[in-house]
Length: 113
Length: 115
Image (tube, rainbow over all chains, first blue to last red; front, side):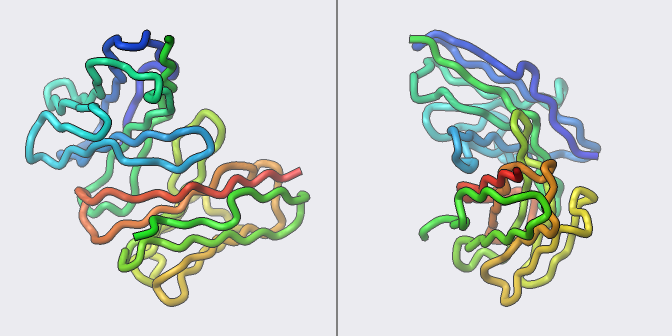
């Protein structure tokens, strides 16, 4: 069964500090992994995706994520937090067929000025 | 490309009433998904269409829920005899092609409140 676990439902960082949002996946086959961001009362926007081409994936807005098979992790990072990064972040995994996405419970990021 | 469009954005209904939501995917996207999201949770899969064929349904999709995509373009999600537990954000997404490496593009959602 496909699933993702996001550790930490709430993360607070100071503006300019490193952002680290954790995601671990459970998959019996090499997964396809995604990070989405959701602003209040909005839909989900794709930040980046891992599709086995490279283990370090760069996304929009300065975010990146590294796929580590040995740790079954796909953590999201950003070197310097900006106030506009405050949002809900979701890690997701899908199967080969892409029939459905399995989402984590989300991490709410607060950026402190 | 105008993105995935959902209508209405908000719906308040009385318990027991029927409601219908519409989703217009990105044109030429052959896959369309419906998800439900409750407060503090990630989106949960409800169903998906490949063109006009509904190929998979979640166990969350009780017999009060029905989804259609009659011509492989827009889709509707109907909830009959609404219950307070149906209150949630209903998200629609579409993707261009099959395969796990294809991202889904989400609409802004329809927020349903059952009173």
